[in-house]
Image (cartoon, rainbow, N blue to C red; front, top):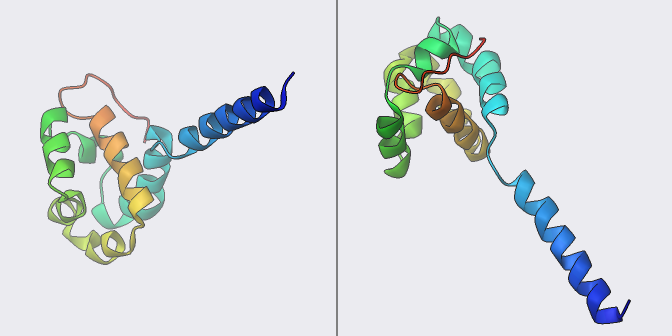
Length: 109
């Protein structure tokens, strides 16, 4: 194998590995909700996610108001929501989108 082919293969493998870790995860979002938001909200992740349809969640995230929406739905979680890292917000969004009221999916939390 030529040196250029080895470098190209290594680069392709590196991009593949890095790109999968940068994607938000539904299961991580569920775990974050259970760990950080379930107690202050006082209700399950299923009830949280079904507050909006998938299109509504997408619009909220698109305008950058997802964190504000968490506080609107769960006023007691304001301090917790303010401290959430952006990567957690992306995971929570994926969780909310996946289990939105019009998705037909029901989480186990």
